[in-house]
Length: 555
Image (tube, rainbow, N blue to C red):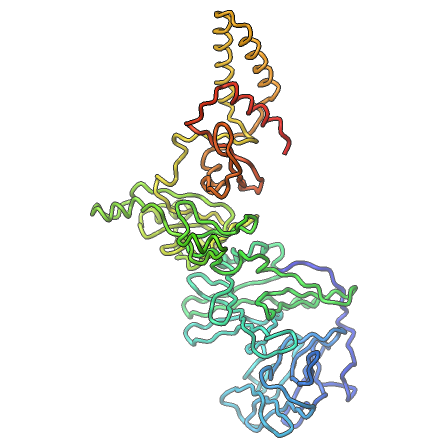
């Protein structure tokens, strides 16, 4: 979150628009109300409070708006579900001390609903932060920041109190021109480690990943350079949590908005353009939608299709997957060794399981937390047969998962190393496998090939077969010209990971010595991988001719 955009808004320039009385106070009292179209303005002129209408609508609402810019920008609405149908509306302190919106018939359309108030002892003040506060001169009794609309402003707290069952959450509008309650909300969820979450009604729609003390590790573009002072405060004992960013008190107008489609938008005012500049810190791809690929599925926005099963797993419903519906997820094809040991009555044990390391990942939802150090995190998981994956972050500690792995995503940068538990039969460990990458040739092949050529030449000379000698001599010259020894090397595990374990969907074609697969290395570089077939009947010369040709290709 927090993309930096230069701006130059002079907050000292206070607009006099919408001020019918010349001087506007920032306070509503029992004796001073707001009648449409009157307004009050915060002390430094940043925000105003009053009646307004959305485009193409005659309905009147009470709201807080930016005061110094030419574009109507609403950050809070009081009577969002009950508009005033004409210009008869009034915002006032009621007899019981609450702040209320009335229509011309004196019907209450909205109330602050604060409790234990003393009549004629409350006032409402609009602050330069955009917060409207109802107080009794000593204590705050109600705040608009604790009953927000669709905007997240500086110093506002998105919070959760588990014991009291209370949340302060951002709620989307129904549409850009209709402020009634929409389908989406933004909240802070404790889970096992606090995360930011966007909900579509009661269904989890997006999650930020756990907070590590500096960033949400599941937001790829969120880093310490562009934090803008975001921080999260948690009290596990009291079970209270809140997320906020402090008032910057500079020349930039900036806030976050949850739009009617469920997307979180960072909006920063550009005085030069005279408009808001929007940036979308989350939900930039379909992979960020919660659980897109189902249990044990992995989403990679750079792949087509975007969903694949983790190594050692297969689609639970192939027909649905073929239609692009991946929600059913994947299932494990081979029991873990520790599970087989348990079934055989030999106890939990560590068995012969291992871990596949997936780099730059968004970790699954609902991790269990442990304070053990990095070197102990793997062993702790391995000793517990119900542990199916683990990860470690310096700011969080050891995370492990004992159930379905849901909402796993591959990042193109940053992220966390996720270790998936697999039986040794699924890990392969490179035994008995021979793989040649078109852009890489194992240096040992060159040595073996040259030795074979010398032997071949010796046999040809002894037999006096000049034709074979000439062919071998030409082949040796080609090998030397190709400079194969200068190419990099890769191990089998890296190549298996790059090709999703040589998945059939990655197959590009069939060569003389075996199939060719498309793959992507951890650094994002695309490669083609050729896997040798034991059944190939081609000879050495045919093989080396292919190596020579491949080595000269420019990709």
